[in-house]
Image (cartoon, rainbow, N blue to C red; front, top):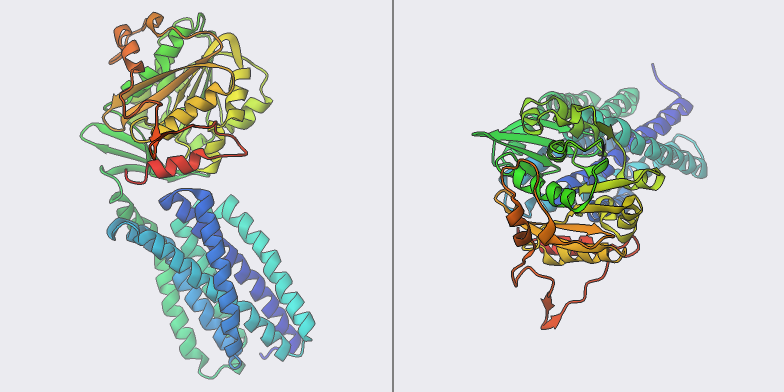
Length: 515
């Protein structure tokens, strides 16, 4: 059955809409890949979107040279998008695991540019074909562009709410590549009367389809072997939640939790971290009726808090329900946290900590801030003067907070900027640090309206590491980790980190470049 020109033009509009959905998915997928593997989400999304758009511009320029066999050209463009885009995530993990450092960023940016360029060729070719079918140029351009822009919105929503949480990054890439390929084969068949030897082109498409379907079903498993090489110990659990990639490893009794590739704890020494996080601040306050934990979805801080009989209520606010669910169900984590999250005193809320504090009226005796390091914009806002001011406003008059504040050895500017930011809220602060073998030397900041007398702080519950006599020793810092930071021969004046001036991220990236 041969189609008339009008029906063919309608097929072109539908094709442009579908491939634009695929294009926007690949664009945001590359940004997500960069954010996960390379860090600094804003930087990676900015670079990938810029490269993608630049590629589209160059592709549009190249399309001027395509004046014949427009449909066949479109089909082969989609073949290439399917192959390059489909295998992008899978190959990215392989490059990261097997090739020298720096190769992954080069590969990601190259793939982003190539797919962008191919996408840039698509639309002019389709517009030109619609025009050849008798549709006026102004109408063909407007209709194809409408399909493209509308498809872009749909693609973005699909990636955020369906593809990434349900399929993950490897399967999503293969799945979207399959859609590009399906569009190409469908257009090839519907326009077969215009294409000489269309069967041989279709045969190539079928070969690509076999590769893509194989990748869809087995690519993630193979990528898992690549991912395993990124971790010291065997992976026993891996999940990609709505917010992050969660990995649990275990080797000879050492269980480790990673979020987006960053180590959260090692079971061999996490007690050092959590005892310092919890017990000094619990000694600072006269009562323990209401406790708030921001982060800490693994339940390990709650385990320490439940050692105090006078604790009445513990509210845990952690954004990702997948972490809390893992801590409640995984055998290894349950052994570590002793089922703390299931205790009747504990209430778990899966909310953004900033939004929770903005809307919550309740005040607390103790607030523990056990959040990941400020390595991106979404986390940076939880290390700002505005955020700490919100926390201050939720403290009872004699209440106190303890903040994990990264390493004063590896990142002294970051650590003391966090301290400066807390001081800017009008609170008194005291600084602590402790050696944790899996992390190195790690820092904490206690803040309260009341004076903090470290010589009066006591450990009144059973611990594995911390004693009352040790607490004051944790407040002494060596010359290379104290707040007298010198830069170019001058004393560095640190400024509070704010929402308007989030300079903490830059300091963090600079500090951890060589670690």
